Length: 120
Image (tube, rainbow, N blue to C red; front, side, top):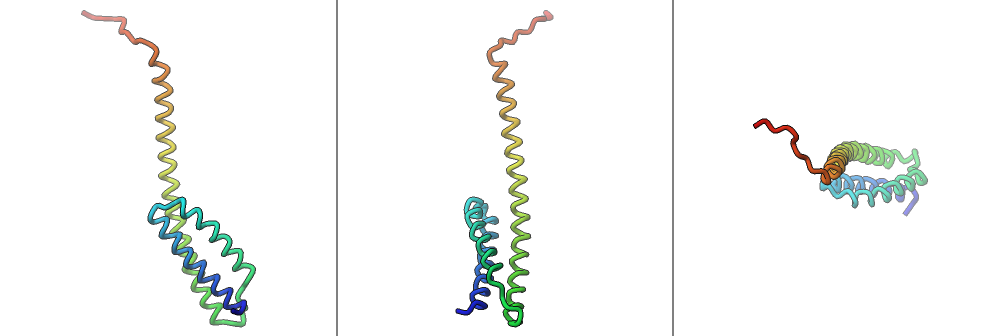
């Protein structure tokens, strides 16, 4: 396999991985998504080290199309990740509120509250 074909193979692998990551995000499989992020970064690094020669126009055009689709997938993934961050912020806020309430009522649990004025 030539370097150019190898480079294009890396672009195809990155494209496939971006689709996989997008699907994982849609399915809410966040831990698996994180595992794939490492592979994704490694592929990007490999692509940077093995560029397609600009004199092979048809390969450059194919790589450009793959890049467009990869960037679209990244945009969608970013949107899903932002939604997930919002969900996590809400959960953290609720947990913080619950902890505050538990602490406050926990301090009062040892006190006996008796009304002092009875209007009979």
